[in-house]
Length: 401
Image 1 (cartoon, rainbow, N blue to C red):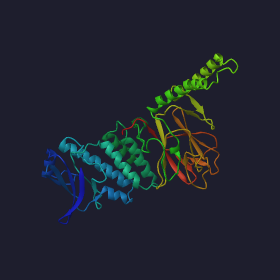
Image 2 (image 1 turned 120 degrees about the horizontal axis):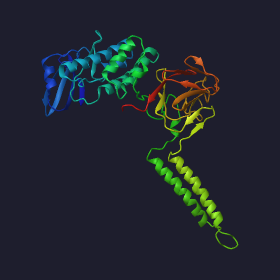
Image 3 (image 1 turned 180 degrees about the vertical axis):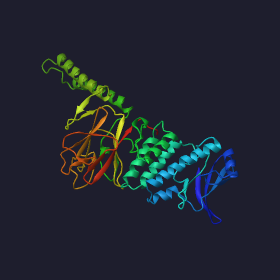
Image 4 (image 1 turned 90 degrees about the vertical axis):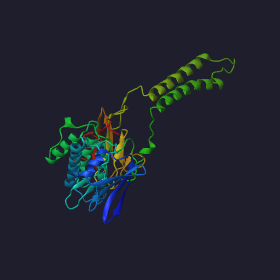
């Protein structure tokens, strides 16, 4: 769909152009105003449908959010009105999927605070997916120091990215947050990893995580076969080089040959076994935390408390935070950040932080961590490393893309 804002006769109009013909819903909108929706007219030109929405005196939600002067009250009001528009649409059309939940297609009346929606029958994106995408846009412009707003937006984002999330769940979230209550744990749904998928690539943190390579599912069997072939080829090469030939008689020392062959086959077999991922082993790191080699179903993200810094997803463990660009996986600048400051590790599906006897220390939920003692991390915990503040977000692998 193509769209643009046009000026005509002293008014402003949102023009959309798409393939298709006028539908029954278009006729309903042309005969009456549906509460919450922008009035529009549709016409057919050269096999395409052109729609004109009257946006005179209104500002797009994208422009409003880019100003960055919104607070929690305005955000709650926006989503309450979005839910109301979907319910209204169902009353008129028996379905609510035609609402364009997008920052460029939602308009705001500054004077009244009323949100106006755009109906478009061609939209295919799921409503909860669209709500989550809108929340991500809000994240880009919200004031990170407004902790109440930050936690509300991130919490709602995680809810909407769940595979089972419905409009009723979002309405319940809004209601509970207005009461100042926390949603019960059993009502939560698997969250979406908003931080990204695997490694960090943040110019703010200056990390070097891209240096650590991983292998895909297709590469692992190939690697295992390569290791095995190499182990079988080495004895042959040694035999061709005459290593197993006796210097006096010129005969082959079969005992030495068989021993070398067995040795290389055992080594290569073990290497292939490890490469194929058949062994599930726990490794103890220097801090005494067990780090599992199995892929965890949860991912930990560090959400910065300051605007301008980037999200830090952690895709492997142990993961070191610090100022040393060689030793640290996630590099944090600052005179109060040690070279190897804090290690994050995983043990049996749980995450732990271990302060590496840093000079400036680490705060966990306001309390100074004891060096070399692991501290369990939970969703919503706050870590302070020097001048850097992070909110812990645990995200499940069961998410909606």
